[in-house]
Every structure is written in C-alpha cells, then in structure tokens.
Length: 176
View 1 (cartoon, rainbow, N blue to C red):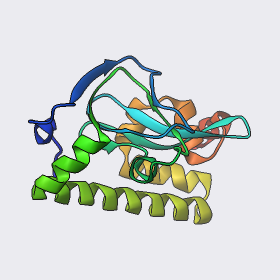
View 2: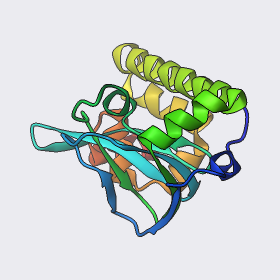
View 3: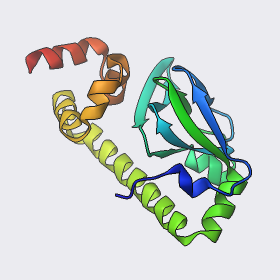
View 4: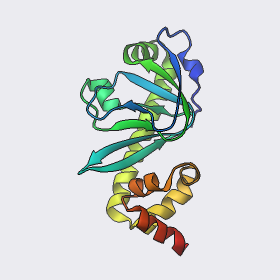
C-alpha cells in the first residue's frame, strides 16, 4: 500500500494543519461532513451511539484518510462521529478543494480510490467477522492483523470495537 503524505495537498488554498488534544470531536453524528482529514500523528476513531452505548467501529493512524465519506459525497448527515483518541495532528481540506485536487491529479485520484477500496474491504471483513466469529476469535484476529490497536487504544474502545463489554475483554485477555 502506498504511504500517504500531506505533500499531496500542496497548492491547496484551504489546507489547515490542526493539533488536537485527545477526546476532540472533529465531526458529530448527524452533521454534514465538509472536510476530509489526513492523520499525520495520533489516532482517531469512528463511533456512533446505539441505545445510549458508544460503539466504536474503526480506528485511524498515521497516513490514513478519514471522513464520513458517505456524508461528504452525498451531503447527508453523518451516521457517526469522528474523535481523537490521543493527541493528534491532522491535515484538513475542504470537500470542494479536495475534489478539485483529485480531478486535476491522477496519482492522487488513484491513491484516494485505493483508500476507499481498502475501507470497503475493511468494512466487509468486519461485518463477516461479527457474524461468524466468537469474541475470542475476533480478539485473536485483532492481535494478529492490527497489533498497533492493542498497543495504542484504550481497552474500553477495543471492547466496543469487538462488540463486547470491557469485562468480557478482560476475561478473554486473561485466558491467553
């Protein structure tokens, strides 16, 4: 996979570099996304509320693009929120500037398409894992495929991501 650099945003007027503390919400569920972010440093998460519970479903680290792509593309309210987990630095670019940039830069367009396909593949895998795997299997899979999540993300977010309680996650970890 190609590494993403904020160099791809050079010559864009509306580029903004943000240094944000942990627990900073960049997009609220129900709001329309108007920016795309590139994570330069730190960790962000996508989450939503279901019956009062905070459900995390994806994490983003250095080099990742993140946005509510459906909201950004369609101009509809976002189905989830975007929040920093740790102090982070992100580059933000407004929707119009980003789309103009990918129209005029074929290599950026290709990279963007690769990232969208990667995201789709991730969601497909997550969906199937939730259906067919036990919580123990989901945790083992996470350890194998995404060890950086285990190292950098608080346990209660990992439990939410796995679809279990923090107590269940603790039991699973103690069995190892």
